[in-house]
Image (cartoon, rainbow, N blue to C red; front, side, top):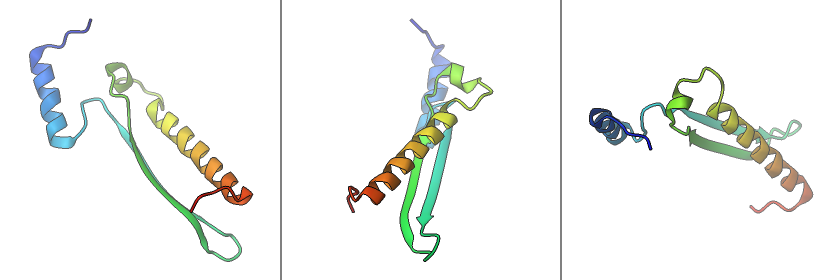
Length: 92
């Protein structure tokens, strides 16, 4: 069982109310546009934002952590969308 000192809990709540996120939570954003190399026509666009897990352990790590997980997820989603577009199974 984790106990937080009441002042820390109050400060975390105030930060959440002010910013919409808790302390030690990072974020990553991506926006991408896929275009046809020959015609230049836009084939698709993608915008997403992800927030990290927010654990104290993640807050003190010096590695990619949640950012790497977000990038891997975006890459997998892009590959799936492109494959479905070439196979004809993509929904408009």
